[in-house]
Length: 277
Image 1: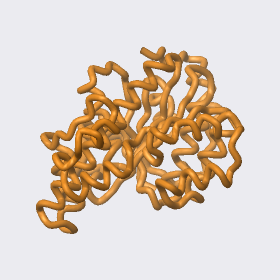
Image 2: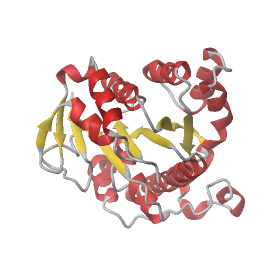
Image 3: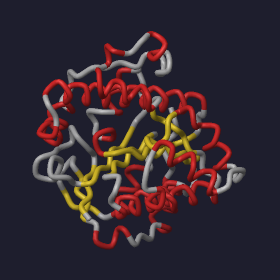
């Protein structure tokens, strides 16, 4: 278990936290539905092993807030690492080289754009990691496996294709996240296609949880801030899959408000904090 941040470390975070993104941010603490300041949220997050920070991928302000949190969490001990949905685990070598200052920005961008889009929205986070030598962790499963599950379902995977997944990866649709996904996305899909979409998301959640747990086990003394989309960061997603691995890691879940997840409709079962920008 990663040790909690001491009082001195928390004080450093509170003193150093200056945020353009936080100026107009309303943060709701879900345990008591109180509005709190950014320093309060950072201090609480700094006491847990993992900090999952959800995003709507195309909203710049979400990435600005993520960067503010990373800057604050990088103060004191334990050492910070940044987990990423955006890259599959097969790209870990390139991320290691980037954080060590051994890979050029054009090369890193090319690697990123093989799997994801909107490099400019993530660029400042990557530069922060490089400039401060913060390890970055590629968490996602192989994109070709995700595509096949999305189109044909988990059962369509061959034994060889399943071997590309982290050992123990499962596809379990028996959790409340599916109701949230249905509320958000079902109208865009036929029923069978929607089910395959859900299977792909649960496979990704399971694989990312296993990759995350493995990283923490192999790198004791790190706190990991995990940057993912809302539907992977919500407690029903990666956190629940972590618990199924037997992990005892403590975590804080911070999500942006969306039409489906907001301070009126969501609760502590979904997130520890919601922010509205």
